[in-house]
Image (cartoon, rainbow, N blue to C red; front, side):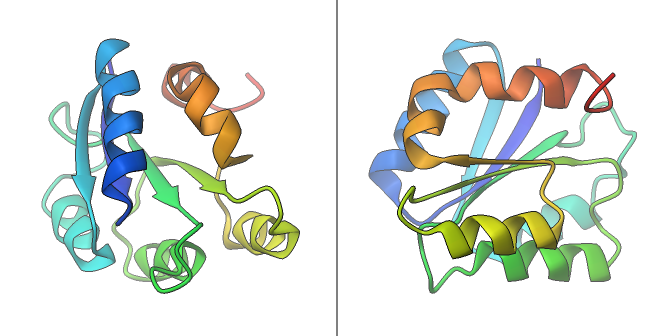
Length: 131
């Protein structure tokens, strides 16, 4: 089981992601502000059992600016060993590239997140990618 923080302001899709990940045995918390993610991560050391292990970020909301949010969390030193997964609209190739440059561990289209959300988390919680 992983602890998951999901940064999204889309309540419909966020609930869908939460349901799929919860059904797969993960504990999921939906958040709509990067500041709230920072607060939770800052209060939970990366190696702690009660700390989140995966941050899922919605890149489809331009006002949320998920790539910048990740960069800020990294700059603030609160990410630690938290793994990151982002999803984007398949028609926004520039958003995908920006997310990759920001350093997300995994970047997938929203449609893939909808179909395979729980499976996508498996390599993120199992250990280093590529291991």
